[in-house]
Length: 287
Image (cartoon, rainbow, N blue to C red; front, top):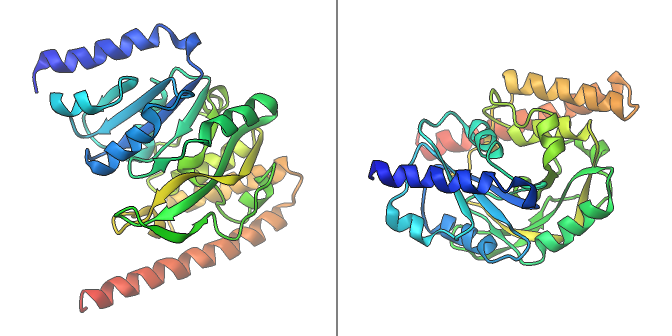
């Protein structure tokens, strides 16, 4: 890839930055691969009339000129030379977003047409809310409907903060967030190598209300390379989750005992899920 081509990417980004006040909605995507799934994700938002810009962080990879030509015209490409985790990539992208609202989308998911109309209307009409999400239709790697939606066992609610003390009930790529609120809490925690989204929701929920709308906002692809589903149930990230839970509990007027009880129950479930995953992995490898 030529140096001139790389410089042209940065010049395009700079031109868009100068019109920051004109932008209402930025889509934030971070990826470490360029493939057909990314093409589908970009196509699902590229022609949406509510989308002003798509900030695409290429984490440890660089596109060819031909690949860039196939990206939607409103795409702002941000090159991250060395990968240091999803949280760091998203924070880099956040620093380049111009919108009043930031909507997340994963590079393997597909946004549905009515998503942003409902999300923006809700946030415009409910100033005490800092974010809004919705449901997701689960699909397989080849795009087939799996017959269920996420999050499971959770109904729509105008304020899910109390539920966040029990578990993560938010689907990351369905979320639309007020940019000023996201910046106020410091964005994602770069040190969180797992559960960076849950940590973000807990800190954001201490700042304002978060709603879950009743309808499906995207197609959520479930495939074998998703690793965060089996995050280790111990380590610094778990300690941070506990600390953020305690802070949110205090904001909501819940006791430390209340928050700790739900945390212990949640932690036991994480240990069970991870142990089951590890056992399955060992058996499949014949160990």
